[in-house]
Amino acid sequence: MKRVALGMALPLVLAPATFTTDVVGGKHYNYRYVKYFPSETTVAKASGNGVIEGKVVYVGKRKLKNRRKLITKDKEVCGRGYKIDKVYVISKDGGVKNAVVFVEGVGGKAKEVKRIVQEKCEFHPRVLAMSAGSVLEVVNNDPVKHEANGVQDFETIFQLSQHKKGMVDRVELNKPGVVEITCNIHGWMKAWAVVTNSPYYAVTDEKGAFRISGLPPGKYKLRLWHEGFGEKTMAVEVKEGRPASVVFELR
Ligand SMILES: [Cu+2]
Image 1 (cartoon, rainbow, N blue to C red):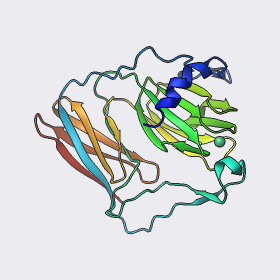
Image 2: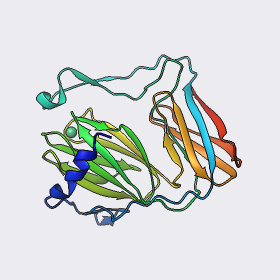
Image 3: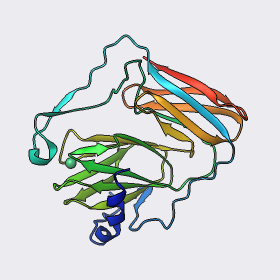
């Protein structure tokens, strides 16, 4: 991944990073800012060898359109014209990108670090998943100021003012649910972090495909979330030795 070089430079920019208070209106939120790299990234041990693989496909009749958002600021970095708000990224054969698929409430806690980068005034990736208790690392890779703003359940859970390139903040996200991320400065910027209550999750690729591995055999509730299509659930049985194959049809 091309972020490796940046990652190596991170300790240097840590010291002056901004850490805002986690008390707003007298209420403590269930997250905290993390100043340093967690000493190690431990993913909950796969306790089985079961696999769920599948596809998320659009089978509806509606013609899906993404809106265009005018670039009004910092054009030398952000570009000119407009950005496309990529809610729907659908392949020729209907595969839906950026759907989050996860197994509901199973397995131990995972401690991971997931990174989101602000580059050319866009968030990359647009959609990410992480299990509750993991750290979201927010990076500014632009020579302009960004202020990533995370909202979960109608409340702001982080607001990261990053005025120059190379700034990094880390936020621990403990509450399962969907965090909508915008930038207070560039109105078109949008991303989503889906915090799951299990370490078994995936985000669909360009073809709408996903794969979740390491599951113990058993019956599970598989959930799907997509920013444009909403939510779906499906019962799935995972058996030893053969992947469970599922297709989510969205319309
Ligand atoms: Cu911005």
